[in-house]
Length: 119
Image 1 (cartoon, helix red, strand yellow):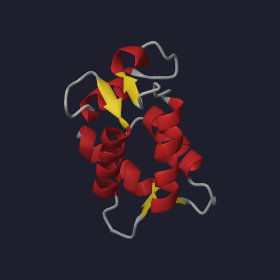
Image 2: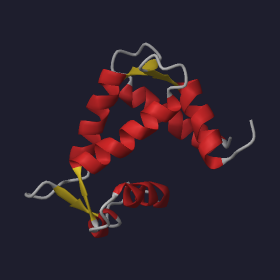
Image 3: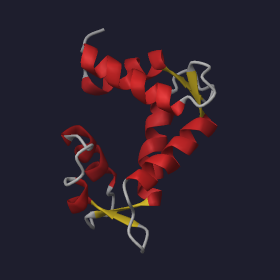
Image 4: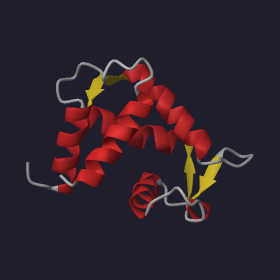
């Protein structure tokens, strides 16, 4: 795994790990979903338009692809429900020991598998 990806995962896990115990609990993950949703800037109707996301300087091409994939109804906008479903699918797939906590190692292993990277 590239050091850039490793550092990015460490930063993401660290930001979501509110009690600093080295793991992201399900509750911390839920809080991170809500924070992330609000940072996307939903409109007055409660949607985030994909066309507006590309204008945000902090959004990478990979993030845009993942967010576009979360648009299950293909209407060009994301609902909170679509974001929650996509993020929870990640949590459930990465939490291989099913203890409702994500470790950095679980996230790294899942990203290797997802990206088909060598161990």
